[in-house]
Image (cartoon, rainbow, N blue to C red; front, side):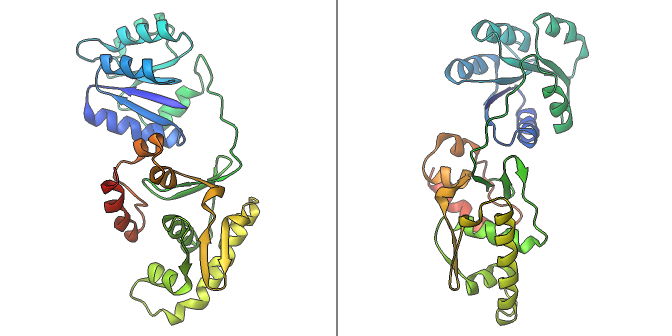
Length: 263
């Protein structure tokens, strides 16, 4: 789904986007710094949900909301403001929600449960979903995969970064333990791979992992991944990139230069 956030304050826009992505990780988020910009984006994109700041210079949020409803009567609009006195005017426009700043993910989640036009959850693609921008996350059918060992998850993350290329057992040892003695870790790699295979098998995605002797890789066509989309030039994936790549892993920084120089 497409979400539009309009606020004239840069810090508020950035914070709002982060909180929205916590609740709607699959959403494509569009950002506007003014009412006019919000209207321009709305006319070009199929927007389902709008978060509008009330106090914006030029055209305020209530005026923008009125225009949006004329263009698309069933659009969900949630007003955001630090001033509670606008609530009555907002509800007269039959706006879906009203949030007081600062807004957090819990506020958004609660408001989405009471929208005038409920958001229909998109059907599952049947694929493993891998998110690389920000912190690495693996999901299937809307649920985050759980790993009993964090290193098994890191192997999946590294193989994702390899984008279909193989990684040897020695390479995985170097990535997971850096300067530690490699030989003493080789047998533990087998344990981690077995756990990764079990995690994937439990969701019926065991074929995603390719294991050929001491070489490991992923079948990239069997997963949905923002990184893969970015490489292919997908506009939504490019918009999703905010200068962050697998933040929890130090080796992830090596990929940022290539990403930013490919834009």
